[in-house]
Length: 314
Image (cartoon, rainbow, N blue to C red; front, side, top):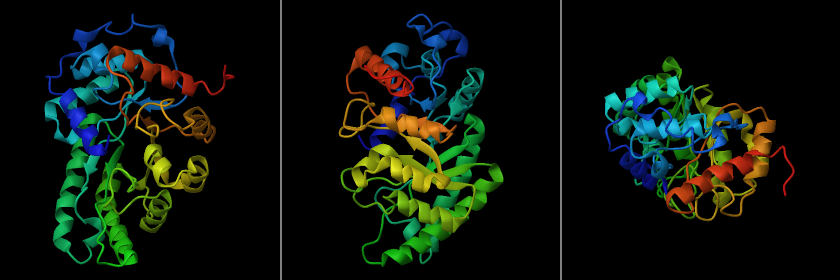
C-alpha cells in the first residue's frame, strides 16, 4: 500500500460527519483492560484503522484509540477535510490528551518540483501556498509536524544541481514554518517498490539536506518500512541521523502491515528508539494484515507485544 492509498483510505473513513464527543462516551472502555495500558512510545494510528470496532465517526475512532492506550493520531489527509472537522479533531485530541502527529502539507509523486525551483521559479508558489495552508491546518488540529514529499527527480539534470535546488526550496518553506512553530519533516521514500521517480529516497540524503538548510523547522521523517526496502541497517542509520530525525513511521516488510507481520524486528527497534530518549510520535502508517475486528485486534496486540521490550520473550 503506497502513500496515495493511505490518503484515500483516511479520507474515506472521514466521510461521515464528525459527531460530538458525548455520543461516544464509554464506547471502547469496556472492550478490554486497555484503559490502564501505557505504551512506552507515542504510537499514532490513523483514521480507518479501527473502524470495525469504532464505526465511521471520527470522534468515535479517536475515543477508541485512546481507550486502547494510544496517545497520538496521524492524519495525512487532514488538509482536505472540512474546516469544521479539522476543528473537531483538534478539540477531541485536546480533550483526550492525545498528540497530533503528521499530516501531509505538500507532495508530488509524478513531477519534479523542489528539484527544479531554482530554474523554474513558477514552481515555487504552489508549494509555498501549500505551506501557508498547512500553517492554518496545524492551528486547527494542534499539529506540530507536517510531511513534505519534495517531488521527483529530473533525469536530464545532474543530481547535485537538483540537491542544491531542493535545499533552497526547503529554506523558503522553513521561513513560513519557523514563524508558526511548525516542523516540516521530509520523508525519504523507497524507489524500488512504491515510488520509482522520487528525488528523496535515503536517510543520508535527508540528513545532508537538513544540515544544509540548518533550520529547526526542517527535519526527517524516518519511515522504517521505506528504509528497510531502500537500505536496511535501520538501527545504525537511526543513530547516524538522529540529530535530524523528528518523527518515525512504522510498517513491516514485506506487505506494509503491522509489526510482527513481516521480517522486521520492531520489538528491538522500538527498544532502541526508546533508549535514545525519543518522546515524539511514532506513526502507524500501515495497513492491517487481517480484515475485520480480528485484524484490528491483531494490530493492537502487535503493538502491545512489540512495546513490551523490557520483558523477556516467551
